[in-house]
Image (cartoon, rainbow, N blue to C red; front, side, top):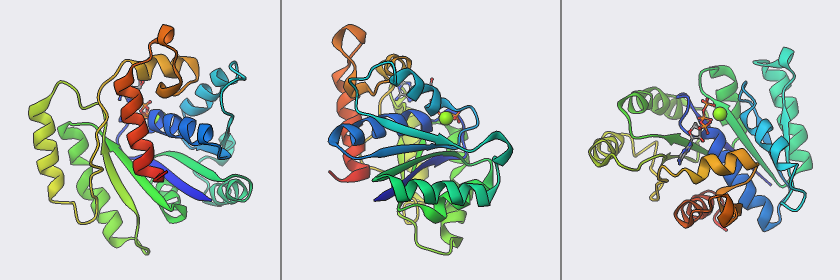
Length: 220
Ligand SMILES: Nc1ncnc2c1ncn2[C@@H]1O[C@H](COP(=O)(O)OP(=O)(O)OP(=O)(O)O)[C@@H](O)[C@H]1O
Ligand SMILES: [Mg+2]
């Protein structure tokens, strides 16, 4: 059993995309996987609805809080506990803006992945996150993954340089994920990039990067 949190304060960095893709590989490997969707937009839930149109794909469950329970720490804790009791792996997709839920997610996490893109805005969120990690009342297995890295070598270089100062608390995953349109095709189909057919836009680079990401998170 593991609880993996994919979270970040910054919007649009790939939290939902990486949650979906890691879940797809984990389920394909044979684990009972559930996504706990704490993204108010319900991005992963919508992806799962599309996935359900393909009964041949490995099954992934998804759960959300009721609208009236959003932000309610007790409801969050009860839902996560129920999922931990019922599945092999719980992947939590959570934004960092609602600090209460974000901290609650960190508290139940076995591992935490924070996607960031190479951008000054994303780097600006790092000092606050490092503070949270340093002051947290348990040691956190937390790592940053750089996502959507293609075509901006100068920014990527300065991002990596900026992150070096935080590597004691926020180490960087060694493999990055490029900007690949296959992620959009897969999203549209309720699939992971590794599951796409050639006709639907399979890209071996995207698939390999996602397999590396999966291995970096789950180890096998
Ligand atoms: N590696 C990638 N290559 C290309 N597009 C990507 C990649 N990762 C994510 N995207 C796209 O970027 C957009 C934002 O991704 P996503 O919805 O996963 O981010 P998020 O962090 O969950 O956003 P939010 O904060 O709104 O919940 C989506 O359109 C997604 O398809
Ligand atoms: Mg999202």
